[in-house]
Image 1: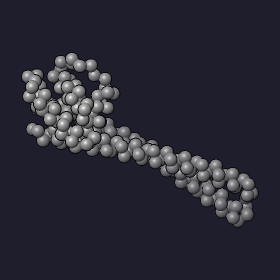
Image 2: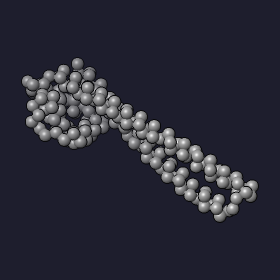
Image 3: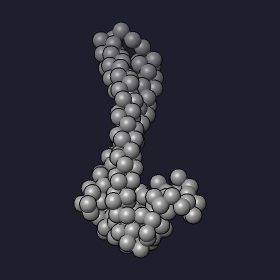
Image 4: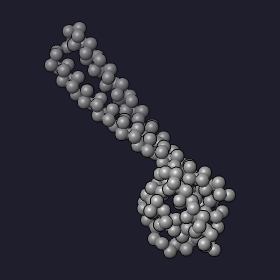
Length: 167
């Protein structure tokens, strides 16, 4: 919440069109993500925006709700697209994982029935086990990122609903 005052000032400055404060987009997005992480911080930011609109002749509450709702809708759309892209990136890893497991099982079967050399089979199983582990770790990392994007999207949606409740 300590950065909510700065974020509210940046938002009001941009909506008013005065552009008195320098805006670094990465910093702005970081401040917004931090401000929307929990309910108390969202309420604090909303209250600061309402007070700023009351104190300013250049910005109305309707302007804030319209601009922020549109910005948040754009961010939500971008987060949905990023999550969908990451999910589609997982499809090849699923196919690779299935293929590797199949080769490991096939190697085990050929070793069991005596059609392959034990040393070659052991090396092949070891290499494929490392590959399966690597792909599995990649998938876990991507799933964590997707989960983070979904949490961020929910935070944006909650703040958007909170702002729209002001109208």
